[in-house]
Image 1: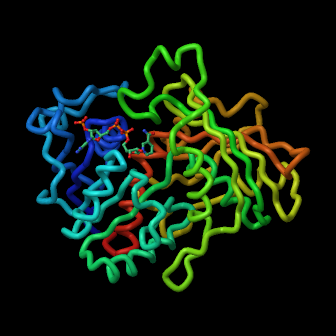
Image 2 (image 1 turned 90 degrees about the horizontal axis):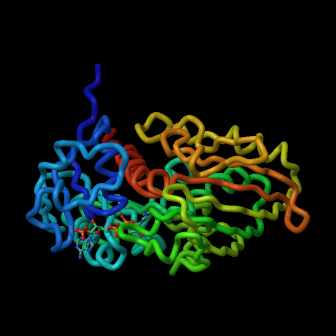
Length: 351
Ligand SMILES: NC(=O)c1ccc[n+]([C@@H]2O[C@H](COP(=O)([O-])OP(=O)(O)OC[C@H]3O[C@@H](n4cnc5c(N)ncnc54)[C@H](OP(=O)(O)O)[C@@H]3O)[C@@H](O)[C@H]2O)c1
């Protein structure tokens, strides 16, 4: 009988919104054991239970509450680092961890579009982890850096991946994004109650670029971006978790809603990742009721790792239109980074 894999993990930015989800998901992770939690100067030296304003409905794990928050510096007795740092801090810190030999799975946007850094959803483009070889050669790192996309991107990319065989040409997206996507403390209550904010800094650009890399092809150590044109408009709405995205998609082959529903519902992860702990058997779940998906009812499908699609219809302007929902802090952030760490270990032949 083979032994269960076992790896030590440090969580960078563990006191924040994504960091809390990481602590929660790692509490039950079959392979990963947390050995360090980090925060800013505000939190360093304090017990996590005091430093962290815990916002999840599940209780904070006792082991985490007792841990003393560490500075964000290499030196942990760990193989894996999961980063939930703000992007400007990640830009400076993450390469130092990769150079020091850690496998870094990052949520931050700092390196997502770097040519030698894999931007990965394992059930979309597991093979892009092939960039790690080039990364190690060009940067001289003994560790590695792999990134997951922006939370909203995850809602769009899974259904688009299922539609790629029909020639995705142009996509228009409008998002309705939950409050947790802004981190903690996030958007002031007086600005968002009874309101919608039609501006999320930097978000539209990410939605217009990241899917092209994720849906691209790895050739000769480079990702050739998919020739898909995207236009995005992003809105903050007063839901807590779950980003809803309305998409209109132009296809080269003008299939109807029935065929599109079948392509999405039948979409399966590549065999290499299907047995990883964060993988779900059905990455895209399609609802046929006219009023689904809804954030409150559907965000936890597949433990928060499935994207839920509904309202698949013919589009009078493009080819098809539909709505997609992602749990932004699980599939879009904490679960995404854990899935990437598992997939990178698989790529490296360690599991
Ligand atoms: N929220 C989402 O849905 C989502 C989705 C995808 C990606 N992301 C990305 O994930 C990252 C974390 O997002 P978040 O929403 O969790 O943000 P957040 O709630 O603002 O948390 C930020 C975390 O970083 C720590 N930190 C801040 N400055 C630091 C410094 N100088 N040195 C070390 N640690 C520092 C904070 O520690 P203290 O509490 O001790 O100050 C906290 O733990 C961001 O890059 C974000 O863009 C977020």
